[in-house]
Image (cartoon, rainbow, N blue to C red; front, side, top):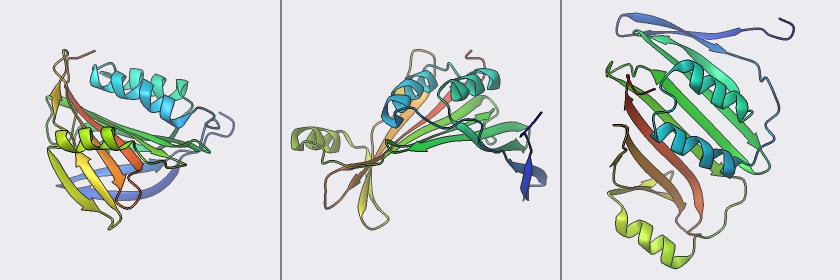
Length: 184
């Protein structure tokens, strides 16, 4: 196990449970296009494809993401993976099952472009008209939460877009998903 070491970063007490959070060194250099990787991972999360930790981990490795941290909390196993390069940053998180709802697994996948460009006005107008909730975020961007959708696999998914207020540019896109633990 050459070049494989685990670095203990902290121990957190959580409602009477203790978890060890570990930081794992990067395995491979992320060479993918961040936007394309998000386009692959988001539908996989929404379909329940990541129903087991081994499928989630295999998908992250295939996309050359690096495991940043992971651990166990209150009977749930979780991990966060990331990749960043000149095309942007993509990150993914999974919890098997969700710590607060043992009947569902929880996932999120996010994308932040390296270079932001204005969203065409008609598309921006359409997205804002569909918004279920909006909020100012960090003073310079608007978070636009789109309506939750139920997938054919019993998963619930919600997209949250982060749009620059002065530029009208996409600065982030996050998909939150929860799926029944029996979806495989």
